[in-house]
Length: 107
Image (spheres, rainbow, N blue to C red):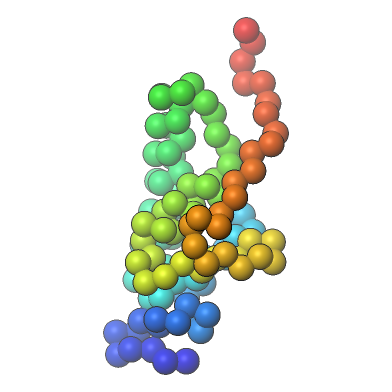
């Protein structure tokens, strides 16, 4: 594995910096990027949920969409995630399925 003196791995396939949430494995180019993601993740989910609830009145329980958006924001040296055995190398290849709707309040 070729890692710079500062611990950066430009080939994400060879990177040891990995974290998994909700069966999605996120690959990072540096420990710093991984730490930022882990630190900001829950706050990011809460923020997005509040925005969607305020703007549209929607309750969104899935966190994976918000995690992918945060990953794209933080990981500036590439894009590599694994979901259910699929390798995804760009944001445009991500498909979010939210097929289940539940009733949240009585009308």
